[in-house]
Structure formats: C-alpha cells, structure tokens
Length: 453
Image 1 (cartoon, rainbow, N blue to C red):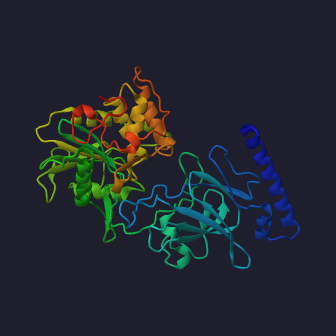
Image 2 (tube, rainbow, N blue to C red; image 1 turned 45 degrees about the vertical axis):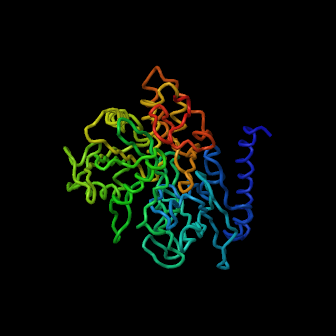
Image 3 (spheres, helix red, strand yellow; image 1 turned 90 degrees about the vertical axis):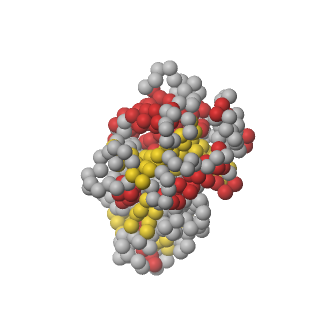
C-alpha cells in the first residue's frame, strides 16, 4: 500500500475504534473495558503521523522520548541512562492488576491514551541498581495532560513512586512538537561518578586542544559540583588515545557550557562557582572571571568559564544564540600560537545535540569548509565504545531538529558553502578506527580520512 494512503486510512480506522469504545461505554461497559475494546488502548505513532485520533475528550496525546535530557549516569564505566533503556506503560484495571504492557524503547514517539485511565510507568535499565523505577500517573487532559496518581509525587519514596522524581513534570511541553511530555529515564545510579564516554578530541592546532563532551558536573552531598579532577583525567586519556600525547604540563583551560539556566541551572551554577563566580545574575556569552584566569587546584594550570547558552530553533536558534561569535572565539584561540597552550572543553548536557551543533559549525569554519558533509560526519562522531576505542555516529537522532536547524542556518550565512548534510551513516576511518583524522599535522595516530592530506 502507498505510504500516503496508509497514513490517511490509519486515523479513520482508529476513529471507528473509538466510536466502538464509546458505544460500549454507553452500554454500561467500564472505562477499562472500553479501553480494551479499542485494542489497543495505547497507540504509538511517529512524529510524522501526528496528532491524537478520535474524540479529543477521550483521547490525549503525549510526547515520549525515553531518557531525553537525562543528567545522571550509571555506576558502569562510560554508561549513561541513554544506553539500553526501556520505558513501559501498563494500565490499571478495575481488579487492581495492570495490563497489558506497552514498551517504548526509542523515541521520539507520540503516545495516545484514554482520558481518565491510570498507568504504571516503568523505567528499566540493567546498568542501574534498583531498576525498574516506577511512577503512577493518571491521564487528565487539559493543559497538564497527566498528573501523579495513587499518592505519588516528585518527593514520594514509596515503591510505586520512586521514578516520579526522574520524569518530566505534568504540563511540561516539548518545545518542538508542542505536546505535553511523559519522559522518564533520568534515574540516579551513582551520580557521584561522572561518565565521559562521549568526550572526544575534536581538533588539535598550534599546541591547542579542543574537546567536546557531556556536562562535567557530579552530585556530591546532595549538591552539584564541578568535576575538575575527573574531567581533566578523561581529557588526558582522550589525548593519549587519539593523538598519542598527553596534555601539556601547564595550560589555560576554558570550560564552555552550552546549557540553560532553568532546568539545568544547578549544574550551570556549579561550573560558575568553581571558577570563583559569586553573582546570582549569570550573564550569557560572558567569561568568569571577566578577565584573566583562576588557578586550577592540584595542577600547574589556570582556567576560566564561558557560558554560551544554545537556544532551540523555536527560541531563535543559531542566530539568537550568537553561534558565529562562539565559533569565532574557538577558531581564533585554536589558530593562535599562544605562549601558554589552551585546552578548550565545550559541552551541553549529554554532549550530542547542542554540542553537535557547535562541533559541526566549527568544522565547517575550519577544517572542512570545502566539504560540508564531511564536517557533518566528523561533527557527529563520538566514542560509542570508549574502552575499545570504537567510534560511532550520533546521527540520525542527534542533533535533534531544534538544534540541527542552527547548523543549517550557520551554513547558509556563507554563500560559498554547499550545505550538504546527507551522510548519516559513515563512520570516520577504516571501520571506525580513525581516532584522529588530521593527518597533515603529522601527529602520531593520525590517519587519512575524508579527503584530508
């Protein structure tokens, strides 16, 4: 059947199912019995297929993307909760049992549920002790979409509510789709152990190092703190693996944070205060300290912090984020023969979407201006298996559209660039083993890739 016809037929079939359900309810059937008559009561569709079907008073649509914006990490080295996670939904029946169970292992998805039904949301990941984590919710419609059920709350510690603290909250809307979210997966394993599995040496020029990766903060004594020791150790390890040389004995470290000051505010504040920031009014696109640097304890180096918030397309995207200004700063620093070398680390939360936006843009402006597609390939390359030095791509899922639009906008500002971002599958090097592609630098472990020579 033609795909276009299938999409038109699907809503019609589901509308018929909802009419059957309403008839059954009118005949004295219970809500749960009517839900079972729909078979299934729970529908998932792709973002393309769109909105909730049927009578809007009886059907509520949600945006589900497991582990989106997760900020905690696993006790297993180099694992985050993004890896091998399943969120399952089980409806409460009148006899107190739950079923059937509908798993959602990948996202984003639209999920459609009957108004008034109660669901057990389980988040399962074998990397996390105590998994699965559960939260009871009720579909209520309206602006909130859902609410906590059976005495659950964000702070509840009962067995059926342990996952509520690690979910999106009622009424929280996905900026891209406009739908209320049910996003689970931000579950604490041991947040005192940071995971830098996605940290990657993006470029090395004139003795200066440029790294990308996830946020460098950890939880300690119920408070987010900057993980200086763990981060610098990870960057040293990456430099040895990719370049065959350690970081210099003395350098100027620049921590560039791309995160926001709302939901990610505690992590942002941890970075800011680590570099002696004291003001409660953090300013985007500004350094801390405003001039100079501060000593990095336990090292012969100094450092500073730069907050450069990256905004979604709906909030102005690359233009409002002043993406060209950030790329220019990084480029200028990397291209200078600085008396003291620089080690730059830019990051968002997971190190994929906003970080990918900046990485691709930097490469377009520097290494790969004549091959934009290659900039896209390498700008979405990370270690997918750090222990075995194996590379992989974050595409096609990441960067998500709301940040990838910033890349396209940045590319469109240069009329001489051919903005081709079609290659979502190529892995740099021979079967993903080219850890550092800039062979013209004649560095150990360098290799030829993407036309570089």
